[in-house]
Image (cartoon, rainbow, N blue to C red; front, side):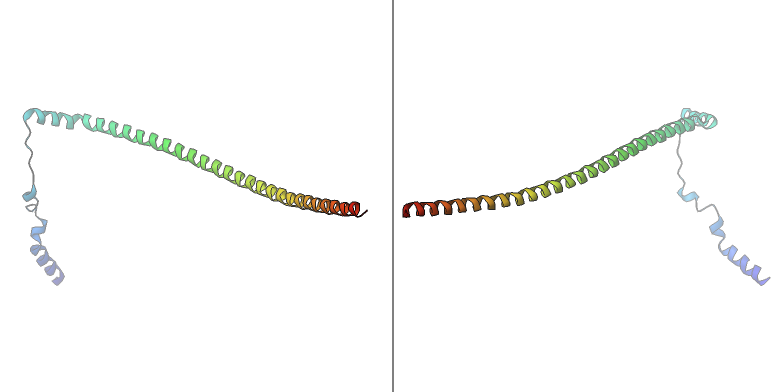
Length: 138
C-alpha cells in the first residue's frame, strides 16, 4: 500500500506533464477563405492531390531508376575500357621488351662485326707495310 501511496504522490506532482495545456501555447492557426476551405475539404474527401502527388513521386522514382541503370551501364563500359587498356599496356610492355632484346642482340652482333672489321683493317695495313718493306728492300 505504501508503494501505491508513493505512486499517487508522484502522479499528482507530475499531473502538469500529462495535461494538454502545454501544447496550446505553440499552436498556429491558418485562416482560409471559404473557397479554399471548400477545395481543401473536397480534396480531403476525394484524395485527388495525394494520388497526383503519388503519381509524380512514382514517375520521379522511375526516372531515377532509369538514370541509375544508365550510370551502371556507363560504369560497366568504363570497366571494360579499363580492362582493354590494361591488356593493351601489357602487350605494349611485352613488345617493348622484345624490341629491347632485339636491340641488345643487334648491338652485340654489331660489336663483333666492328672488331672483325678493325682486325681486317689492321692486318691489311700490316700486310701492306710488310710487303712494301719487302719490295723496297729488294
